[in-house]
Image (tube, rainbow, N blue to C red; front, side, top):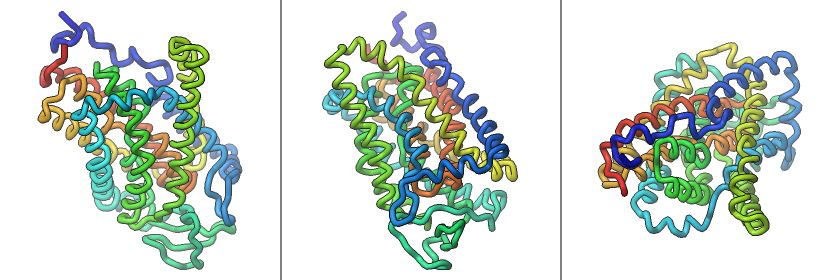
Length: 401
């Protein structure tokens, strides 16, 4: 029996086989970082504030947190260095799966995320979150309004000598969900596609295509949906965020890959260099989470169900997008090897960029940053569940020889 036959259960990789210890227990590490961050916030409450104060400022407004920027660069760089851009040129040979993935990621996913998050956070859970609960977020870059002025759903106030926007807390959570919804995964999806026995070539192509597409559409869609949600629309900061957290590591990864392969060969690059980088992304992510939760500990301890209220719409969004992608793949007659990663890419989120953007746009202590962190918390268990669904439904699709 071949590994491509529907009944070849013995050939299917176990769900943890392709993961290292970091990826396999990511949810556990995230949980420990939450606990550690909250404890750190209690023991040294000024620590995160001091680090967040180390920022690049323009006109007196902190725009880029240097410690967070460093951590997030090391999240992104190992992902980008894996991309073989020569494969992007070959993507035209697989028009259907590539077209489906782009359609789901950019024409459907951002808007379903907005609608689902608005329904739950703005209506069903609004009373549980606190109808009058407020959050303080950064003023949009380049905007100078008088104290007491209104901007969208926010009011300008003076906090610790800086002008901040006071917005409803549920809207701040909505902003974080929006930033997750417009960030298709380009990292862990390589693991999900492999575990589901998908087409690795197609997955790699879509990682490259999504990375390039984000440069064009992330700021546009983010600004549009934040504006619809009556939230700050910091266009310049959105573009700066993409430049720092996507374009910079993308360029660094491209030139590093090119130089190392030319000097050492592709075999050394894959077996030696990438092996060293494997834990870097997750380590940088976990360090960032400690900082985030050291600042949000009081909010969580005061309302421990906050995580649940945010997780519910994120879970429903993930399952919905997966179902749409998987269903469209069936209707379009795709093979299972292309259908599985196409659905996975849309369902999972590029939480590294979402976290980075939320911190830059709204601040380390914002509800938006917390919402993006919840996306990390539920990512692994939900995606492993979807992997199992794929493996059990292989018989619904044709299999390539």
